[in-house]
Length: 295
Image (cartoon, rainbow, N blue to C red; front, side, top):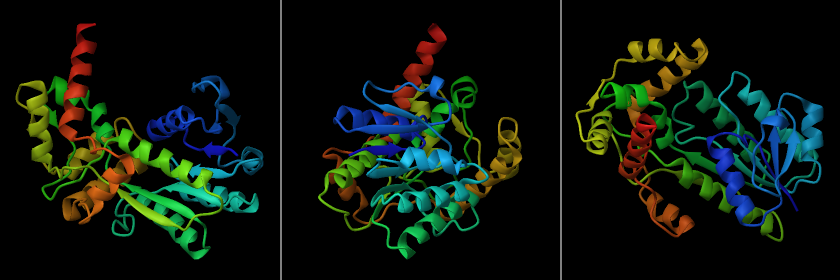
């Protein structure tokens, strides 16, 4: 029995692969460039691309369980639906799909709506799956060294309602546990949905305050200016992605990303431990930034 992990070289997928390998699972990883793949011993690397039907048919042979994770790209929905259809054709009846929190609410955010459409197909076709709906990752903010560490500004315009941000390490562990649960079951399990959020609801000002504590100096919140955010984002990303992120931030400002009543107790039972906090993540990241400067 084997598990195929798509998105295996990314922030979440690479961590999922490591968890699965540590648990002795037979893991296959889908990669575009085999030469750039670096995984734990025993992991089988499979070359393929979700836009290449023949390569995906080959990658799905001998697979019992699929972890379907798509990058945010213009043809994300096509990639996901074609792969899902090929998996059904191959007789795969165990699936963990990586969606997003509030996928049905943020209808004008392109990559949210794409994931919601995949969820609808899973539901309409009666596919046995775990649907993971993670909130905004802590680790997105680890990329903000220049703004936070160098300039003392928390730049993400997440607004004043609050996001229950979550650590990518917790997401990956829950995903791996679900893959193993489905892989090791005697037959297909009922579909379930897991919203994955962190233990604290953070506004932009609160996030800035946590960074100030972690760095022991002033960090201010840049505010809710979406025009400025989009123009900055376009300096290092395509225009379509900058717009997608702008619309997402607008939705954060309107609705936040808030946990359900029993969400935290459910997640802690899945992990058998508390969820990681943003404050701990910020201290860890601040220490890494300091070490990088000293070296």
